[in-house]
Length: 412
Image (cartoon, rainbow, N blue to C red; front, side, top):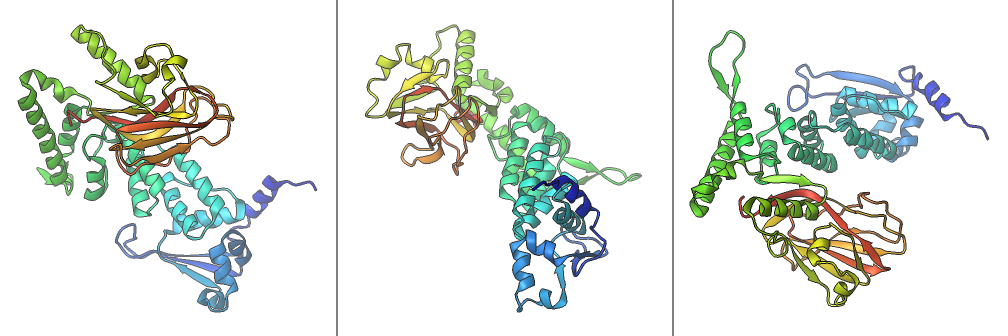
């Protein structure tokens, strides 16, 4: 049977707003968060069969005698804007979603509520592709409002990793959300840069023609974090001496795509500056082998630090290897392998903040995985200090790449 889905979608798209047997009423509340000052009302005529076909929630509502919506051929929506509802309804006709990213956050929430899975998928894809440092704060606030946890996390990470661009203007967000953004050690900026940025936010101008400034509702949080950074610097210089006042310029956190290689580069740079050989093991990373991995050196004859720092892939049959960060912690954002992983190799990756409680972060399964492709990540609830690779089947020859925001526990 020949099909032309695109042509059919175009025909149905043009049918929106041209009749129907069911009314969707949108009543936006007066004022409040996202509400209109005049309490805007809008009505859309649609076909009930489209609502039922796309949404199990509407299907139950329209086919059950006990629902008032079935009896009145009308539903009243008061928790979403008319703009979001219109995009939602237009999708039911065309299978296409278009709109501003901030509105698509609201459409995502609506798609989730009414269980329109395909619309939720399309909105999620659009938001992932469109997320950038320039709009991260806006989408973070919108995702928080509509309780979209995945988007909220992605936007927050975008802010942390690209802080200089994302935070160059004071964001229009609640004090609670700003507090979450400014939590210590996860913003990838120097303390000096962050202080200058926050001081620039400190006040906002009065209306044109008025003198002076108006205090921002965010000011108490701004002042507290400026004070915190000054206290950190004073504590550190007091403990280690005034020669360490360069700490003000130290990166409190930095995002890395390969943690172990980044640690090695930092170690090597410091050794060159201070004029001594790099001391990677024990100073940057400790390595612990599982009980069944005693033959590691026989299979991997080069110095251990070369494998531990991801400068060379290593071989490992059934068994495990663990890395511990003695002076650092990581906010984990991703895992991958440096080389292609053949399908006959099955391994798991764990992480831990204390070495006692291990969290399963990823399972490779028995499938081919392309080099550097991100594994499906089961995120840990906290920052972590230990990672363990466990080979369950096959001969592992690869390197584990760990992505995340790396912070120095000694300095901050």
